Length: 226
Image (cartoon, rainbow, N blue to C red; front, top):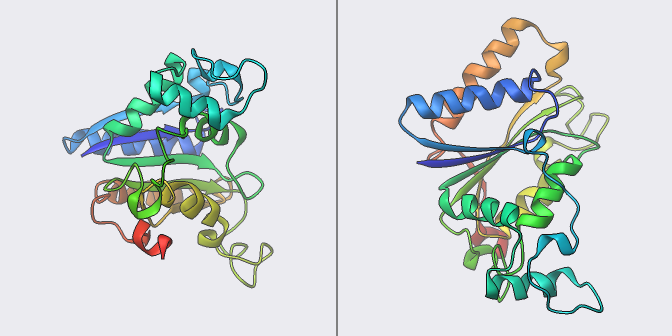
């Protein structure tokens, strides 16, 4: 299996960093191919503007989707973005590794999606959900939260479970673009748990990444489209 990990955390010694290292080591040892985009290490710019492109459709007014469609037809994306698009096409499975901030994606990862999931390359022309560009590929969110597990429940302080919190990502981004979405792997409050508990989580995560092809599915493009 070819696995693409997009890692978002500014601190290499974070638990997110430990999860990514565990995943890469496990997958490589099992003979899988792994590619990593460490967004902070890369200095990835999350801001979308004309720097996304080496082509221009309309010089007078910037419409991102118009420019994306034009660039898709003419191989007109900036090299840094084209490299990320190529990784998406290459992989069989995508892992988004991040800390949950304000119940959503951190800015650099959201910006990566904004810039890389472009019209003509990730969707467009009726290519979404069951007809999506990435149909046949799997995707998983692997994340940490600041809040405890009970906080992410109907009775907890957030009033909803982690799957509901991640719905815009699972359905509005991944399933929309054709991915089959795997059940997320969430570690709640890693800074407040013991070393033994963190080791247990890492062992469980190793098992998860080695079963990406058969892991439980929560969103399939066909179901989302219906």
